[in-house]
Image 1 (tube, rainbow, N blue to C red):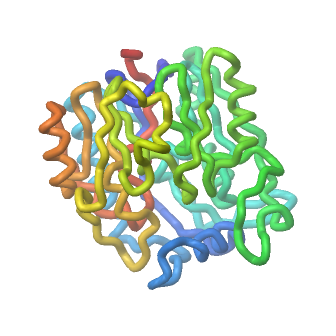
Image 2 (tube, one colour):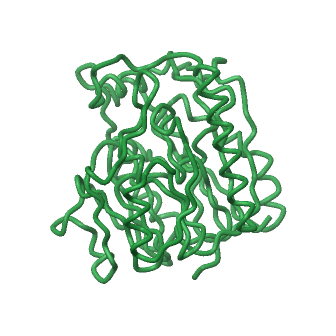
Length: 338
């Protein structure tokens, strides 16, 4: 198993596709609960406990279609292991149930031939890296450099301020989906799921070969519903969050495609939207001319086709309920560096 991926658009050779099996919304992770309560959605309470079986079944059907589509492009697909996510796990500081294996993009950051298990900001997901254990063992045997960031303690005393969750700068903490890879340049979004000392730790580890660029135009969570490069020199930008005044300077000479709110077709969700409607721009590039896009995003598909991209439409019916689009539910292991 070869691991080598430096960008988001090179010809895809191998990838991990997540699974919704046994998915669970944590009910014993205090920090998670407080962060969910502080979100923008207030019409219904955040969900807890096992995800309804119908949602899991329909998501697995959609992920099977994604795998079939990837197979058409001769992409090797690997799957994570799964667990009983409602079981209690612990550290000396806290106990919690876990979440799922749906979004491998969050837990592992691939930079060249190095895989970094990231110091995630959610207690319920601190043990999630174990789900790629089989893949890790094979990749190491085949020459990959696989490391784990220091596990953050995520203490109540450091991250609960006036009863609300606030990620502080006491220890490095970030999700891999806070990082967007542009070859030797890495964009790092400072947000509720990634702090500045996390960016510093990342720069320390990868050394001078790469440059970590901090951006902070959007505070909620991950970068891949805000900045979505799909080819060398072409990037989709969330027009609600990015404009010509705050767009990262690395995109100065790129074709910048601003997606407006009216371009998004909001997916339905079950009771509570774990992701906003902007999950609609969360797409997966197969190569520099082909992208996998949620089939319901007809306006975005039209925009891309007018830019001479080939779009492979695939459904992902519960992307908002489970909090992940096609970029989130995958982790590319090997891409050509074109």
